Image 1 (spheres, rainbow, N blue to C red):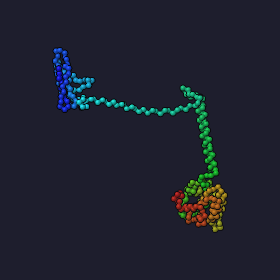
Image 2: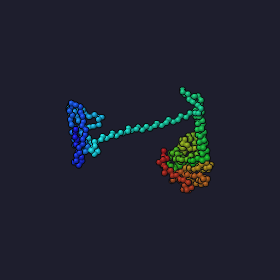
Image 3: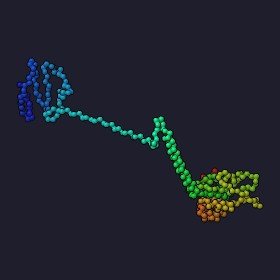
Image 4: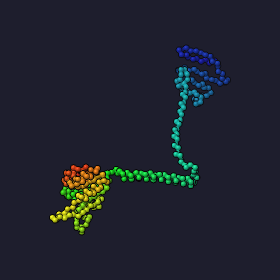
Amino acid sequence: MTLRFFRRKGGTSRSSEEPAETTPAGKDTDVETPNRTRRGTRSRKTTTSDEPKSAAAPPSASSGTSTGRTRRGRRGGVGRKKKPVETKAEEAVVVPEPAPPPVLRPRGRTAKAGGMEDGLLTEVMERQLEMLKSVQGSLSAIENRLAVGAAFGAERPRLGIFVDVPNVMYAAERQKVKLDYAKLLDFLTQGRELVRASAYAPISDDPGQRFDTQRFVQPFANLGYRLVTKPHKRYADGSMKANFDVELAIDVVAMSDRLDVVSLVSGDGDFRRLVELVASKGVRVEVIAFSQSTAQELRAVADRYIDLNDYLADLKP
């Protein structure tokens, strides 16, 4: 009979009897020795005398026991192993691909394996022709509207330019400057619709002299001006003079019904009454000249006065 002793907390001990373990005859066994335990138990595995301690097989992983110190568990019990935490594999997020756009097919028609049927091809061509016809109709309507707007109300004011050539050229010579009359034409027509530009220039009474080389004609030739000419008048003292006051005034009055703005390039005070008459019809009158050669009465009746001295940098050749 084997006696085991257990120590209680508090210093008291208690003995208990256990039935004796029987062993086969002829074999000696070692008596299991109880060990004191600290909060838990430390156990030793009993070994037989036939096998040396060094040859003891290591505990297998499946036995659930360990020869080392056990982890501290609950009070008086054996330490428990922590269960492995199962981690779920991250699920891959799959983005669905966008569905392809639907293929539009004409109703009642099918496509062969090798290509479109003749009827389907004909129907597609007919639809394209209908679309082209509708586009052409829209363009025709837009063109008609633009034509009507241009005929009954232009956005830009209609302009007529009338140049007293001897007056402006003599004034430029007194100022000792030279003007580029092509630049003058562009300057006056900015933002306006030019109807006509007329230049009134005297010519020589010598039939042998070339027209385009004459003094008052050459600066305006082939620049977009309509040249109105007449020969000089010779006086007994040998002087020559050509006056265009009547011709210029008649043209301005005749065209004033089809103009919004009249640009008079002259500083002659004889045109004062002409300016008043045209302005009474609702036409805007501008006077363009050098200030040193402009009559004050003409400048007073004009709707706008443009001094050429202020624009010489832009009008020089």
